[in-house]
Image (cartoon, rainbow, N blue to C red):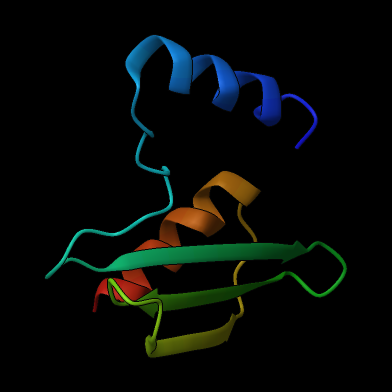
Length: 85
């Protein structure tokens, strides 16, 4: 927030307009947020996903515990795959 305020003021002066926020979703589109956690002790992965519409309303959610041991990066890929199925 501290860095955003001067950037926003500069942007308004230079462009005389406001930039679209990166988290805004255009009409007719959806936003997918995912997260994953790896439990090395249990050898499993927890994946979560939330799909929202352009108004921020929740369309669907997903929570899964998968008995597999993989890297955190691969776990997030599985979260994306599970959410899109």
